[in-house]
Image 1 (cartoon, one colour):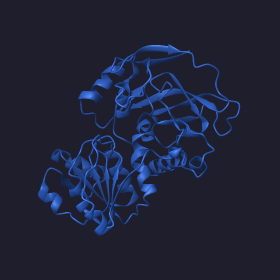
Image 2: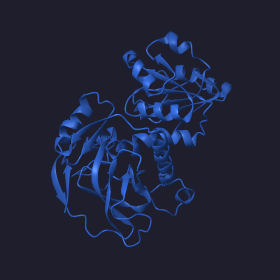
Image 3: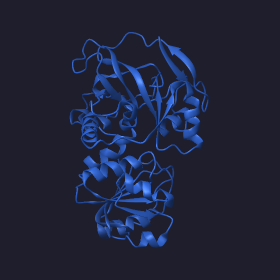
Image 4: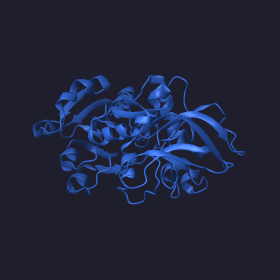
Length: 334
């Protein structure tokens, strides 16, 4: 039996829950969970914000742990190996997207907490292709958030072919944005942090920002028109998007990784005349996850985390819902 924490209704408290996972599939891996990050997506799924949560619901998709068992077909991973697991737990492996190394775009990819039980548990299962070894130089206590938040902001660096000579802006210095600053700084970019909280300037610079702009100051935004090759938005609120498009150089790109509920609205002429674009991306493929982990180990990049014991899971979720974590929350088994 797997021991977990589950909610039985939208927005409900997470309570001790046991379930029998059945026989281990021949292509599956069972992970003994050591740490599990808490992502805002866990909260959205808990509340059924997206309309497809199944209850009882066990959150958790930023898992770090050791392999407890492997299926008969698993050849690339061994029992006892420390690994991580993120948003995806399986992809078909044979469609055009999987075959081209874009498993994160597989139309039938399965989420770790969608239709299956996640990592707020002592063990969790996933298919071999999405279980990624953790480099020995990375601290397992801080690495869980890399498997969702981290890869969300690292993937655009790879997908957009961001160069070390590029000028890149990051909107929002929170759970995603603080990792984006660290990655982009280590990548070699000239990095500007956009934040509505002026008191975050000193920390943004410590995280790797070369410049800081108070996004509530229209004059400050006006002063950086035609400045950036890429602006990465990590926020989930609607902003004055035409203002940010104006800050892009010709051929510049406004790239969204934060999920904004409202439709984007912007005049087309600034896009057409300067060949600017708006785009978005999901998490990365297993290969890109591995590349991110190697890069993080080489440059000693880790998210800033607050740790809670698993027994305080509801307090941790409440802090995410109503508090201001700095900047990611991680649950730890005793």
